[in-house]
Image (cartoon, rainbow, N blue to C red; front, top):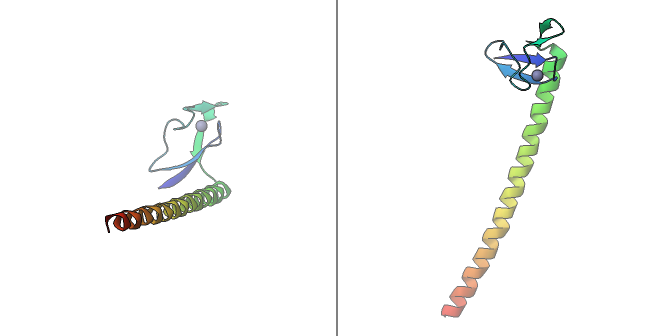
Length: 88
Ligand SMILES: [Zn+2]
């Protein structure tokens, strides 16, 4: 898996091999050069950092959803208690 970089839209992505066009903007050529080239070390570092930030964002969202779910099940638990209280 290699890291590639599009000079036209500055899109960084991973692929098995160099695509003939950018998967994001679709450009094949830019100023007489292929728009997509192998990413430099600095761009790969940036890409990894952004991916990590995105992952952390997803983790935070997942945690928030888990918290929402817990408070939701707490509410349904309370409803169950009320229902059993009514049944009694
Ligand atoms: Zn592009």
